[in-house]
Amino acid sequence: MKLASLKAGGRDGTLVVVSRDLTTAVLATAIAPTLQAALEQWDSAAPRLNALSERLDAIEEGRLHEDSALGAFPLDLHALAAPLPRAYEFVDGSAYLPHVARVRKARGAEVPESFYTDPLMYQAVSAGFYGPRDPVLVTNAEYGIDLEAEVVVITDDVPMAVSAEQAAGHIAVAV
Image (tube, rainbow, N blue to C red; front, top):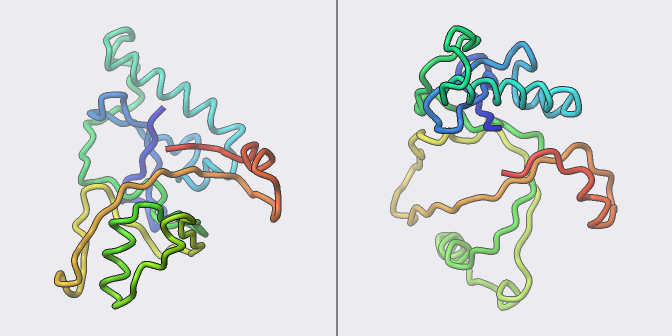
């Protein structure tokens, strides 16, 4: 199942299910208006989103007649927001040392020796994330623009101080 958020529909976008080949999408708003809403009711939304995904892929692969497309439309990748256009909170583990070195250098700081053995982790809130085809806006490109890939794990509400084994039980989606 592939989920995405369209830029249309407000600050949190509009939830769509995307075909396996990334060419077609279908609105999933009858299940949840946004990915955030789907995550908040994941136990009931996930099976329905998965069924919609399987139906869309069956249509795309010719295993199901096109008339049952449920309003499928060609996907414009430029119309996509970040999957979660804003997050209440996120934790970022910065373990890619060349990136950490560039960011620290831009601030005039050195990479502490401990970073070579203990990855940096920070907790933050989000006012918004860029979509996959959005330009990255900066005030000065001389800072040394750098990109990094992210591995995302979306959880439900994780209580403080749980063990790693207990935290694993709170994973809703891993991207």
